[in-house]
Image 1 (cartoon, rainbow, N blue to C red):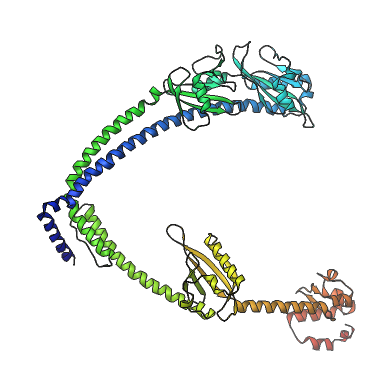
Image 2: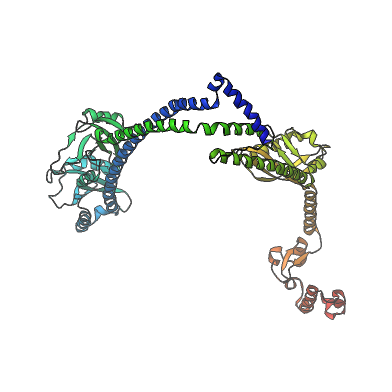
Length: 597
């Protein structure tokens, strides 16, 4: 058969060579010209797109690096300020600090000063805004009218932490800020303010340690838009600068809420790639700027390399394509013919390609696939018949529904129980088999729950047969998913538990009758365990013996109802009754003491 298919392919090849116009549209020519067209249409635009995307990726990487630098610097500043404020707050949480002896207050403030040299001065203000204690390695802290200053109002009256604007300390000639936190007394009421004047030398350490290429720089702007720190300057000679009117800063402020990196003329009046991050604890802004000449240099180098590579790849693609065209056409025709026959149902189709390349491997794989497919279809058919037979002879009810709730399988157990044949219910909605609207709604609700993904489920429900008999069914339901994870079938298996439910109801009724007799009978009914401890004591026993059930429970039965004189013989009778030795009635008659019981 393979030779016959090969022979059929030969006349086609001969006829294609006999007509020039047919050769023009042959597969070989189509592959050649198609290759040129695809290279021009796909490779060049694709290469151009890749170059563009690589360019954007490189730019984005540079932007991300700038953002990371600004975020890192801002994080370091925030952490340092947080550490200073946390230590200040720790001391402020000492209750009654404003009422300590001056010597104790002075010792605590000195300890705080020694802990970190960033504290230039610390002081305690009472509830009137008066300085009651202060410590400074320099001259004493001077505050003008502190009771009306924002640091006292915000910390004491509004009960919140406060950071003052940055100022140049006239004594140290360095930028400083003041941290103020409220103090609470023993009743947890705000009773004063603890403040610390902090030098900002650490800002220069952070900006100097932030590497921004070879020519980039970092600076920090406070909430007033004042430049308070800059890489390359010294804190002792630095002067605060108001840059709010500078065009580049207005541009930065206008684009703060965007996620794009900014390209603008920066602080040093050269075009830069800038990124900003807010130090949220103090509302300062860290700005990182890298001149675009340095930022784009790797990008331009990458573009030249990728452009040359794309040109080389295009030339190589043309050469390789024309070299291997001839080795592809004929095997491809054979594979196409064989695939067409296999798809038409000719499972015995095989293809013969004597080649050591991928097409030869593909031919072998195709033949193996055809063989496996033939075997698989046969096995699936056997398996389907096997499963079908099991479903038909199974004692359990099996109903298979499609995703819409229509019946696609209804086994013999279902037919026998309901008197419906499969032909009667096939394609019908499952809940249509329930004439009772409540039962139908319950079945539909359960189906919707399964369809919503709540599976597997186990529940009990009622099913009305064709002759309107109500059967009680214990269902187990689950869903079968396809390759996409969507429900393909819903499978319900059930067991008829109608008789079991009837037996349970009869047993329950019997227990209720027994309980009624136990409570209503005029005879004393006493029950005890193997140790003769009372476990049941009915109302009649309460009347006859005078003990309530609560009093009798757990006591030895003989202690309650047997006279002391007859206790021994009764104990003997009970023990023999427990061991079932001898005739109890005969022993009672023969016992002289039995008359007293």
